[in-house]
Amino acid sequence: MAGGPRILRPDRAQLRWDMVDLESQIPADHLVRVVWSFVEALDLAALYEGIRARDDVAGRPTPDPKVLLALWLYATAEGIGSARALEQLCRNHAAYRWLLGGVPVNYHGLSDFRTAHGAVLDRVLTESVAGLMAAGVIELDEVAVDGTKVQANAGRGSFRGAGGMTRFEAAARERVAQLKAELVSDSSASERRRRAAAERAAADVAARAEAARRKLAELQAEKARRTKTHPGEEAGKSEPQASTTDPEARVMKMADGGFRPAYNVQVASAAGEQIVLAVEVTNSGSDGGLMRPMLERLRALLGHFPGRHLVDGGFASADDVEWAHGVGVEVYCPPRQSKEGIDPYQPRPRDGVGMLAWRARMASDAGKAQYQTRTICECIHARWRNWDLRQLPVRGMEKVRAVMLWYALANNILQGHRLASA
Image (cartoon, rainbow, N blue to C red; front, side, top):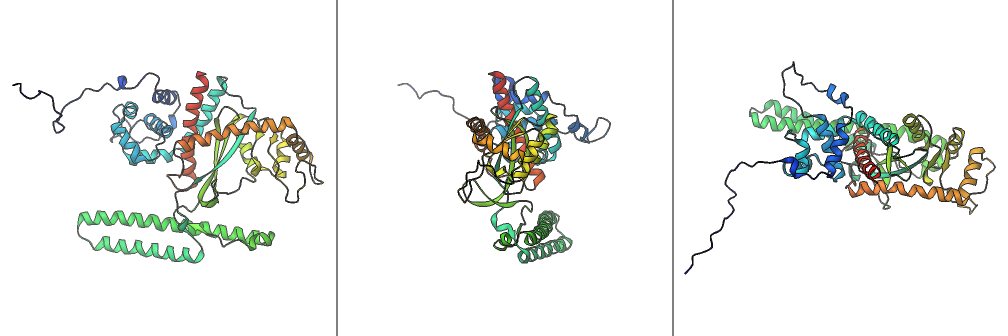
């Protein structure tokens, strides 16, 4: 009678050496190669100048900034927003291992790099747009602007008024003093390290509490000023509050109708091509008054104002429309419906030349058709939501803007590659 089958069984406890050819694991048309090609063409001298490890100075070498830049761009396009998750992928995922090429990274360094170079990211975004313009991929006579509210890294319960802020700040200071005293009295080295870490965390909470108190004072002063000029509007509003988690965040009405701590992200794009030109972050829940600052930013970027500026109804203000008309910009923005039922396209006694031209333009079929092209820019926000941009992983306006620049750059790499390949 025949014996049992002779088979090779897995032995997962056996140590073995493997030969890995990273190049063979990544197809020639893989997105990660597109990202690396983009990064290799950049002038990143500013990042290299900041490296303290030098040939004539002792110290460990640092990971190549190009590698870190490419990692975050590719991770963003893959919907990865966590530095810890990115570190895991760098160990196990072929595309990330290919990008690294053996360069060691850890989540602390990855997290710091993501938010430390906002000015460089801003310049890279400008250069990416200039490259697409030079290649004839996009034209910038028509620019669309759309805002989106992104949930902040703070809870609604972190917002406190004057009384709650005083109690929270006192408790935070007391906790720091308590931990310092315990650190001095403890003789165990390991316990001292643990308590030192706890003290640093408590000090961070205390610092954020102090920042929140300063922000609350600003909001109270602003409310006092508005009470003098608009007493009726301010009478029904609640007292100002600031978040002890992210003092710069504000509670805003979101797209789903709910109210949550958030930032208002303004995105200017080449209408129709879905290429991001500029990103601005505010903590204003309204888009009113944001048209002129973005147009001035676009002038600095392009060297001239765009001929046509497409925005939604929340941006419409008579002062901005008049100013835009004066600098040669045609504004395409739907008028707000009147509560009294007055035709919004009809001229008003106080209308200037710019407002009269705007109302006539938006009343025409050609103007309405032109405005419809703005809806294409909303695909950028949809793409970002597909990349899991639902809540910001960082706190503070500066860091939030840096994160949004990563999303803008990743968008431009993918969309620019599609347009150039079409």
